[in-house]
Length: 111
Image 1 (spheres, rainbow, N blue to C red):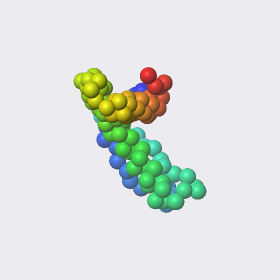
Image 2: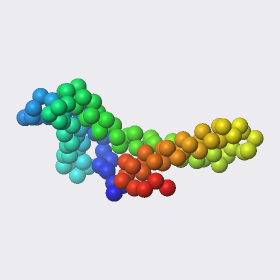
Image 3: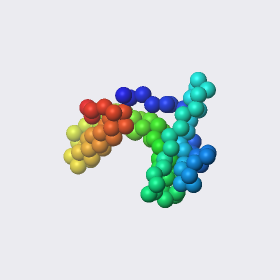
Image 4: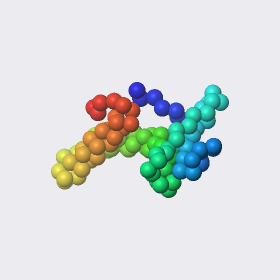
């Protein structure tokens, strides 16, 4: 379940909906539209908008997380053992946590 709609996502108020409704939407390359409504009755409108912005930013964040994992793995492979152990541990932990987040976003089990 790792596929998501890869195009640029946007945020706008939902048409013909309650005032607290905000939509994260994307135009697919095929020309179809896809929308995700960020709304709950007990959520303030500013929170619904924040939720929609988070949904819209998710594909970009996932792509950046994957770039950072690749960079950190490359960096870790290039570092020799003369570096402070705490720095190596920090790099290893960063890779681990970013892997967990990436796997969660894809609906996969972390490596």
